[in-house]
Every structure is written in structure tokens, then in C-alpha cells.
Length: 392
View (cartoon, rainbow, N blue to C red):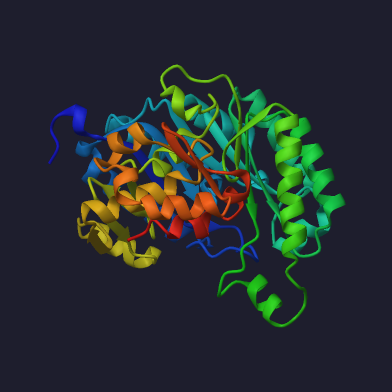
């Protein structure tokens, strides 16, 4: 389709749907692993890569899951060699998500050898009883050991994932976790407030009245997070994401994105195109959104027949597309510089959404000046509600 390199898609996401065991809060498509199915999945993923490689020139690659680090050395080797053969290596940012329990020196070295330069580690908590409650397979000790292994393997861009508002988590426990996590000195911090999604054990426990949701405590924890992370030298650049900063020259200065920000995610939030491969993965390429089947068996069968495993396809009208881009972009502290939004979407926020912007400003959730529109700290706390106003 696209033969000119200038038009090729620069962002690639690969979904690894396997986990050692399913966590109590997880609503993502993932399943406990079996050796045969994983081997079959690896072969299918490589086929899918072959089908889209002509349209890819990745500047960012992201392996998410599930637990990508669950793949063994031989399976990683097959995937990485395929990326090499298809001329898809060499991304500026190449991230792999890891569970602390599945990091080994050999695996870390192999990933590093093939150009992986960023690891995102699913820590979630450093409190033993809470890790158990979440159904995590790692201990707090494993987190510190894995962090050392990754540093020794030469990784100088590490992200830690933490969760707050976990049932049973007090403000004191959260403070202690933050202090220990920040003391590790990672380059990036991602945080998630626990969301109770249907079909998860945590949701069932909530329904059964085993605990209550304390919205005020969640707000206090979020404030504590911002206070501690910024105090430790991190810059908040999105609702839940913090990075060490040394502002990149290559980024427009209006966005003020720290150098260790996750560029792959920034592309999502700015409405960029990306390919998503693997079961349940979504792609967004030139205004067309496709979604793969959320079934590993079916995914493999389709690719074994030589065709993409696409379940649905949707072409968004330009204005609807721009509205989605507006909504996602507001998650970032920089919000939308008007010129930047026009460059990304060919629409002007001031022409298409003046009433919505005024409503948010009046509510104290947003601020605007001649150059840009963005959410205030209070607005960021309720970004999902704010974003809905822009979805057409």
C-alpha cells in the first residue's frame, strides 16, 4: 500500500496474551499459558508481522500483555530474529513489559542485544499482603532483584507500574510504597487507580460487599503521588505518568515532554497511527481502526490460513476522529496547543468545540489562553468525564 518510507507507520504494538496466572483486577485479554499454544502464537505473530512489515518503519515498539517476559529465550529469539529479517529493528524506543518474577539475566541480556532499550516492570505494590490480594506472582524482594538484574544488563530507561486505591491499602502503606519505589531511581513511573471492571474477581468481591470504595481516600492518594513524584525530580506529563526530565529538542516546546516520557504512549495520546498485532490488539492506521479477535486459538487459525485475524474494522469520519484525538490528548498536562491540534487533525478546537471548552473552564476543570487549551490539576483528576464532551 505505502511504498514511500515517509508514509510508513512508525508505531508498533505487539500483544502477548499469556500470564502465569490471571490477576484479580485484570480485564485485559490474557490467559494462563500452555507451552504448545505459546509456540503456535509465536509462529502466528511472526506471520502477522510479515503481512504488515511493508507498511512499517518503527520509531517505537511496545510489547505489552499479558506478560511478555513469560516467553522463553527461544521464543524471544524467534520473534526478534523475525523483526531483524523484516528490517524492523532499530526503533528509538523499544519497550518490553515484564513481571518481576520472570526477569532473568539471560533474558535481559538477549533483549538488550536486540535493541530493546526500555523495560516496564509491573510492580503494582511493595506491600506483601496487597500483592497477594491482587493475585500477583512476585514478592517485594523479587522487585529489587529484578531491578538490579536489568540495570546490570545495561538498561538505563526503566519504568515502574504502581497501583493505588487497592482494597485494604491505607494512605500510610501507599506512602511507604511510593518512598521505596522512588528510592530505586527509575526513569519513569506509571500509576493506575484500581478500576472495578465486570468479570474480574475484585469486582465480584466489591459486589459481595467485602469492601467499600473510598473516593476521598483515592483522591488523597493521587495528591500524595503527585507531591512525592515531583518532589523526587519527576515531571508529570500525563494523568498517571511521570518521567525524569531533560526536555527533548526534537519535541515541539509547547508540549514540554520530558526526555524519558514513553514516546509510544505519547503517539497514542496525540492521535498518531499505529499497528497493533496479536490477539485482541487494536490498530489505528490512517483513520481506520481495526481490532483483532480476542481469542488466541482463533487468532492462530486465521494467520495459519495466511490472513489477518481482524474481527472488526471502522473508518471514522474526520470530525469524529478529531474529537477522539482531542479527548485523548487532554490526558496530557500540556493539553492541546491550538496550532498543534490543527496540525494533527486539520480542525480548529476553537471553531468546533467552543461551548465544550467554555463549560470546562467555567467548572474550573480547564484553562485556556491564546495559544492552548488544557485541563487544570482538578480537571486531570476527572479527565474521562471532561474527554466525553469532545466525543462526537
